[in-house]
Length: 237
Image 1 (cartoon, rainbow, N blue to C red):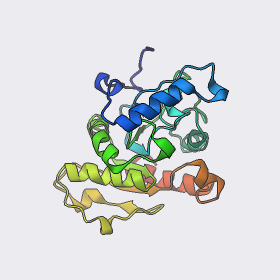
Image 2: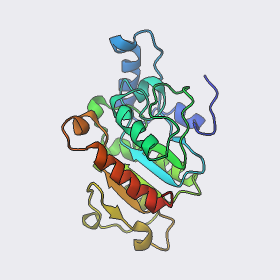
Image 3: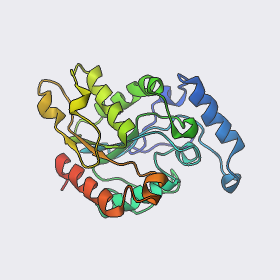
Image 4: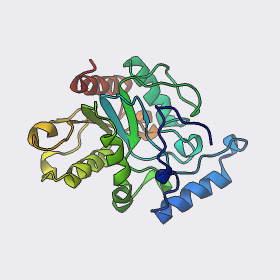
């Protein structure tokens, strides 16, 4: 295995995780069969860790690895259609040192940002279950606990939004979901709602999926605006 930099932490127990049989079967089947365009490339085919700046003030929380993106490259949003939208936006926002990311070893560096996901293995049809997210939650909590400078979370999509709320419930927050509904550009001051708990405020954004960007549900100005909101909340503006 390649060496891992401080920006790419791979907990040994995560690499060997087989807690979700459906996801294990899918990630490994995809890695074995491959897509024709990548037939000469090795596939990662394992759980995908978070990565970014260890001193990050902002945490970007996505859904799960793409079957032929992160499941192939081993790095979140790297080498897939979502990343081709996200990384240029991160570069425009000053959160990444380059506007693209195609391989894990391309030298990309994030600034003030950590990228992670609610589920670490590629799910069939890009649809993990709530039970699979629950089994993966300790890895998300581990990422958050390892980022002492984090000041805000940006959730891309309703699934990531709910996954973050569940981490707060695990910390003892008595959440009423109706008060914290997902909505693009919505800001949830959970730190104020639960001042006695170590929780971060949450910003919601539509996911950078091809379906959203191709249909105009999420436009470039909308993505730039929600990143600016998140940066401001994290003290990065």
